[in-house]
Length: 125
Image (cartoon, rainbow, N blue to C red; front, side, top):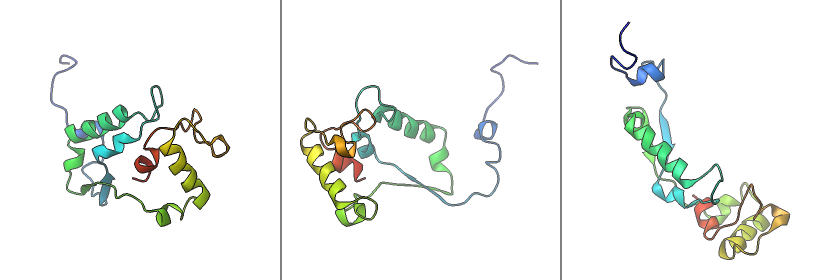
């Protein structure tokens, strides 16, 4: 048996079955997505999102024939209101403009969903 780091590795080493036919896959990514910042210590840190995208790119996952990388489009209010109440969308806009005035009734400004300037614009991506 050779030294522990001898030989060559490929994606097949880590992702068995990668040589099988794959379905078309779209990875939604753009550096603008790192504007979504819940603050220090929150698990959805912009650095983690950026590092994940860079790792996927350096492993060649984003260059696979069946993978397309697409920037997200900004959702309009009518699209947001398909899944959120108009009152909630308005509340996010208010808190986004003034993060020091959270809307705790709607969970905006809590530990799980901290308020930050620009949160409406960032979350509409």
